[in-house]
Image (tube, rainbow, N blue to C red):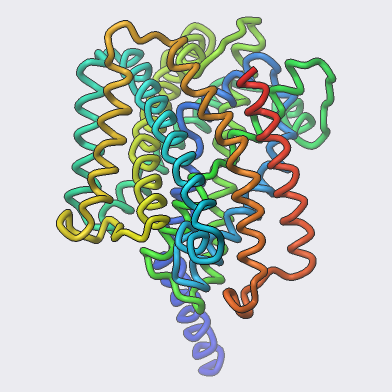
Length: 422
């Protein structure tokens, strides 16, 4: 009896220790994966559900696998080397490659930041707030959050923002979909060779993995100080984050498929999706969808400038990071500030239209299509360098999956970029 009690106490102690380690590493993976469900991502999943019903749900399964593979590699590199991705690229490849990559990342993320503020303005107006009030106010709050607080405090705010994404699963259930049809469409691929359908597949996959995500995740792992002995739980955290992101995408698609598609009302963005839900699924679903869009836009408008400033300063070799003071990392904070100011100002310019913002997004997607395949190849070369990674290099089986993912994602995102540009 006493031996059984001792065994139970030890088992509880082991489980509590494991739980403590998990919570010690929570943050980078969950935040990075969830912020990818930004205004643009929500728009893509909304349009997929509204225009094609449940027929694209199966695409989310291979997309989730691809996301897990790429994010796990970045996290592992950060733990094994204690260096960010831009640092490793600068040290192991030509300076010219680093300069061009940082320039492309800077322009792309500046355009994407403007798109996030546009989503913020649209969500604010749905909820009854003028863009000329909501955009400057949120821009100041975003700036103050990073400039005035330390990394752990900022991370807690970002994790809280991840919780608000629960608005989308609730909206999905309120929409009362046919769950048998939803499950069938998720398990059985549906193919249609019409250009619009193929383009939507490319868009769904291409919007899920962006270059900035890899830079931000690895920099966050390094800044958090995750050690090799903690990494098994760090890997779990990355996988949990990727699954959460895809679950949100799933419910956005389901909510729009069950209501807007069923009513035969095609849409072209997330704001239209929120407005269309009001008469179809009720005011509560409409408000939840709009709140989710507002949160996602605010979340991404915080992360995108931060990830860009981290990556560019890493690539050049300047001091960076939220735990540094303004005096110690002046270039980092000035770049972060400039990206927020420019992104917010573009949305508030007199005469700016949705068509102008759409063109900005299309150009940024084209650059993503060019940048991502190159970045994935560089990552695979780095992670297979035993002098750099030691015992943390990819196994042969993992390499097969990773290279297939890199080539597939590269072709899809490049195709998306070219198609968007044309």
